Amino acid sequence: MRNAKHFESAYTRKQEQSQKTVFLLWEGKTISDLFINEQIRDREVRVIGADGEQLGVMPTREAMKLAEEAGVDLVKIAPTAKPPVCKIVDYGKFKYEQARKDKEARKKQKIVEIKEIRLSPNIDTNDLNTKVNAARKFISKGDRVKVTLRFRGREMAHMNTSKHILDDFAEALSDIAVMDKAPKVEGRSMTMFLAEKR
Image (tube, rainbow, N blue to C red):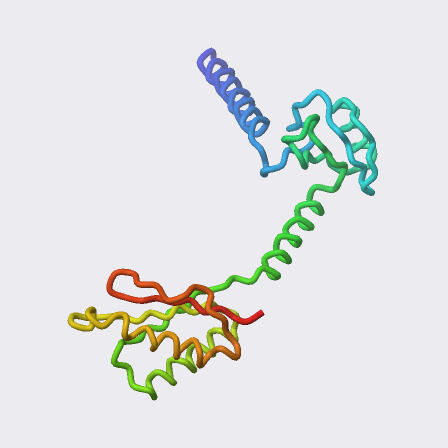
């Protein structure tokens, strides 16, 4: 009997201890990157109401009471400000609106890619025209084009005489593109950048 009682009290003690541990872990852990309600540890905060009006600087407890009365959360939106700025708002709705704004911003953002077209000094006219048409497609999509003229072996001796190939290439696309960076020698190649005309 004594053994069973001892086991039961040890079990309940352990259970209470684990509950305390869980509580302490949850208490110190942030649910997200924003602090809400009890997680806000500042003495005073600047409060913005649910409909966007400034309520001024007040103690955090008072701000939490206002949020409780409104039936929503107190969310710290600007932790680096002095004093920190908190907003009385429904946290779930606030996170949803924030995610939607981020998604809209990403949609409007245009990522400009750099497409490369490689040429050789002894390129034929038809091959050059094919490469020009490929560059035209890239430029019409809004991408920048890097035109590389590669030299091998003995071709290195005639680098300056081959510059006209890049000039002809740029001239063929002069109706839709401008030279972003003029032809420049880089090791065994000569490169030029073309971008869409604005």
